Image (tube, rainbow, N blue to C red; front, side, top):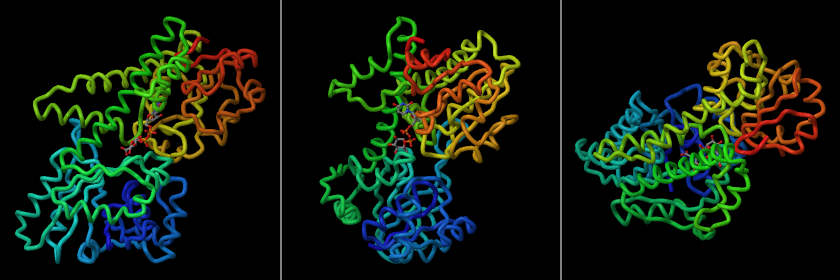
Length: 434
Ligand code: UGA
């Protein structure tokens, strides 16, 4: 099928490359000329394992191309995937300006029947809004609006695209649903479940999924607080809970709170959408509050590890990105943590395998290092903030020698407390006895 994907951000680029790999002819469109030129040269603007390879393979095999010419792309496509940004406004609601602009362009350029698919996470009612824009334009052509949310995890996006747990299709007519199934044809042989429903349900499935996962993480983060008070071990509690098949073991890793470009934005939008429809989503509001709180608790934890004050002390932070395998700093828990420590009078040295460049515009007065050992050099406290694999296998002897004080605060529970003790560290983690 001829497909245009509009917006070559994270979602658009992975979707474009993935759909091309499924055998469709895909043209990716962006208004950013520099970005399109770079993509044409084979340069990938984000760090996502496997994406570069997938893009170049499909470009070489002539199923994937890039353009800034929106008009031609729309006219040539049977299906148009909207993957433009929906940034949060000051009040937490999603800004639909770009989605609306694209919908108006599609309405203007319609030259035959089109499938118009929302791939960006959009508030409930956006599908209807696009339908209204098409109708008001007076176009004689049929535009079928479909919601097809993505469930990609950064760092694992290619795997998630190629082997999804499910494909959700919200369509208002059966022909549109059938065309969507055609686009995703290779997934049928993998027996991927397809959930076909109306547009509103599909839009809500996305928010409900992210809201639930964020709640699950927040739940275990609160359990971790209780563990610290009663002398329990959050890892064992999570294992014990997770073995109940109704609960499941995933997303029960306690840490410094969830971050990234999705959970914070989507939980806040979920609360906001409910409010707009006259319902106060109390769990979602609580999740947002607790998640903010957790980060401040992490600052307190580090200060306590420093003996009650970090004034004049040097703190080494290992990991800046909101999770491993990404350079994404959006809503990373390290932002309030580092700023909180600096406010308490600490100097910060930091290392991250990918996110240093993106951190530079966020922090002031942070010394960036080339590896974990350089970061540890002369520091009073070492904080493991993101669980990159390379931090799981540190040469602990070297780290201890580099540190001024053998104090480690592990916000991701990467190390075993007993082992750290026997290696001579004063070790603190999350929800586990020191
Ligand atoms: C998340 C969802 O997992 C995807 O399904 C969804 O498509 C995506 O949002 C989106 O809406 O686009 P992502 O933001 O890439 O994906 O990251 P996750 O791996 O879900 O992690 C989110 C945050 O939760 C991270 O800060 C991570 O450290 C934290 N987390 C995750 C925990 O603290 N504990 C856990 O057990 C799991």
